[in-house]
Image 1: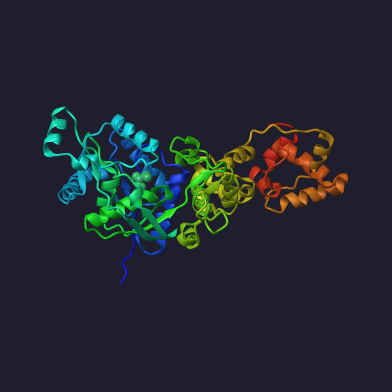
Image 2: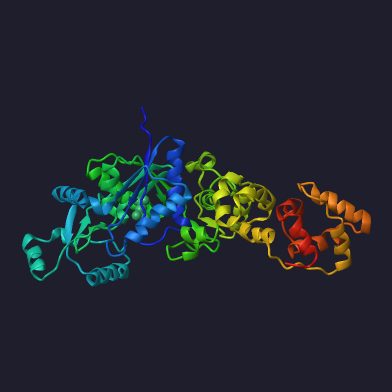
Length: 448
Ligand code: GLU
């Protein structure tokens, strides 16, 4: 029997999530969703200096906006005792050893190695220190940092995205797991938490491939089952530039504030660089059905943020009233007229927020534009009596056409300019009953 997957998204709360972070968050969430699995949000907050509660809260809010509600939540800072226990085990196994070199000493050594044409790999000098030498270094006031002793071998795995993958650990320095101040780098806590929480699949960016070589060795040293790994390509801008948390305009909250729909951001974040064309997919289930990790490209997932505009417009054009009812109320549209208003303006919107502008055109005041008052006066005299409906515009313009001989643009444009003050806008057949006869008459007379 295979157990349902347990996946995790493990951001560091050191900044706001951006569209590039949405990619692993969604790939994990959709993977679990399609398989009846669960999703853990784990804050990788071992960097105490840069992690803040405000960023941690923002992670949950931004995920919720994307439609991701984690089944489980954890933060690494609560689990330090577990990390310590694992570190002690590795020390006892001789896999975690103290080193005393300063950054400058390491840098000098690296330069020497490079000068000799050798790869700049840590030479494990600390492994041959005697007890007395260690004691002498500590007496100097040096605190050790701790390195994991890699097995000199190739680690291979079957990657959900990349297929057969491997990392030659002989080409790596023994990684530092614990800094001289006693704090952990991300590498060990991540393994301990993945192992103890029973993570079945680790789906993350391909910038972590080398980490996987190291981390598989740590799982094995700790006698823990090794999860299945998948490393997806990273979102980059069109010029190949990676995204960093500093790119504020592509932060999820920035995109939300700019009025983009989560569905547009989801579609772009997930479908870029996949086997599927980038298109507007409204629902999470629909999107989950399109994602096949094995089909994700190996090339960088280049995207153009402007694509969000088209995706957003397509989602808005198809958005049912029930989904926007509350937002329309917040934009000042009275609930009793909101449904027909939505049906009328929806095709003209790139963003839902623009509905507020069209409501102001309905409710007024507008500044009528009347280049030909005689024509408009004739039209006003023919305005049908209420009640008005979706046919009123046609009946009226047919009557104006018969009376004045105007047709096409010469017929419609002066009426649109008089009633809305604008050259373009939603279908007047829909707008007319919303504006109502009294207001239309006032505008035809040139009054706001
Ligand atoms: N905190 C790590 C990061 O944000 C997590 C990587 C992983 O998924 O293991 O890059």
